Amino acid sequence: MENLDVMVLRTLQTWRQSGQRALLATVVRTWGSSPRPIGSIMALCETGAVVGSVSGGCIEDDLIYRFTQAYASTASLQAQDAPQVLPSGAPQRVKYGVTADEAHRFGLPCGGTLELVLEFDPDPVLLAELLSALAQGRLMQRHLDLHTGACRLHATEQTAELSIDADRLVNTFGPEFRMLLVGAGQLTEYLATMALFSGFAVTVCDPREEYTGAWSVPNVTVLKDMPDDVVQQFKPDSRSCVIALTHDPKLDDLALLEALNTEAFYVGAIGSRRNNEARHQRMMEHFDQTEASLARLRGPIGIYIGSKTPSEIAVSVMAEVLAVKNGVPLPRDMDVAHMKNTQNVAHNDPGVLVCGIR
Image (cartoon, rainbow, N blue to C red):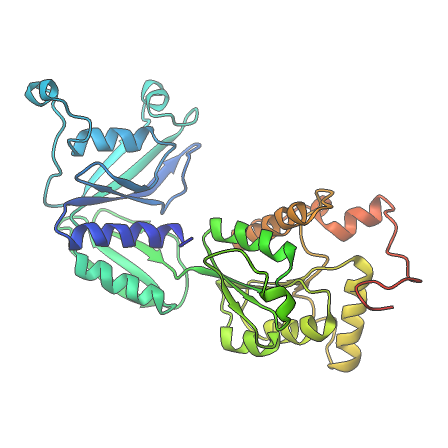
């Protein structure tokens, strides 16, 4: 599944390229609680079709009523309050939830208010240019003149919060977040599915035919090369994460070391506390790593929810990835190793094989 912003822009570009009129709505300010963050976008076609969201649905319904004929009947078309058609010209700034009655009407949380910029009939050529740049992995800023509706695109090196003043709206769009998973087992299938629905482009690598041959999740790139080679080809950036899930040091370790030398925002490996300690020891002994160089290596990965099954573990891992992606610091009580140590959960028995390693 595509990144939501990319999906909105792609659908909007398709509408406009086919000659249909449409608007792009952007959340530019919020006060109090709001259902969608600043920078959220939605597109509305003249047919009433909507992609993306700026609220829980009530504001979308109001925009459909105000700017399309989707809810019109013969009687309402003749009435004074008949639904409008999409206007032309300069963007409009509108606020929802200014009063308690409006907040209730539009389904906004108590005390919530949001402001939208409505941009009418965006240029399909510039939309195609923006989509092409995003597909190439470039970070782009879209500058909108609030007086004329003219738009310009600029490449940028760093993400930035949406900015708006009396003259201009600047919103930054990035390429899809990417996830590289080492290993194609059952846990990987659950995690890949969750990542797809979270807007990640997912790549799985596993040289073991017995695993890749049974892969069943669609819309995932599956590679059979050695994981460390795949990491080099993948070129992780600040919108990428790399997660090792095989429990096999021959596959996981070199891939993790390659990933630690990139800008990936999350690098981690599945395994117990004991396996995690053994992994650090191997890397320091055989690959000249230090505690400092391994500080970014996460493990045991996930947040502590008492997960036991592959699906529960995938939920735990996906939650941690999203928290790191969104810049949310997790409390100490969510750390798997800390909580297991605090609760005196026994380590794996060192006298038996643990993931193939004594």
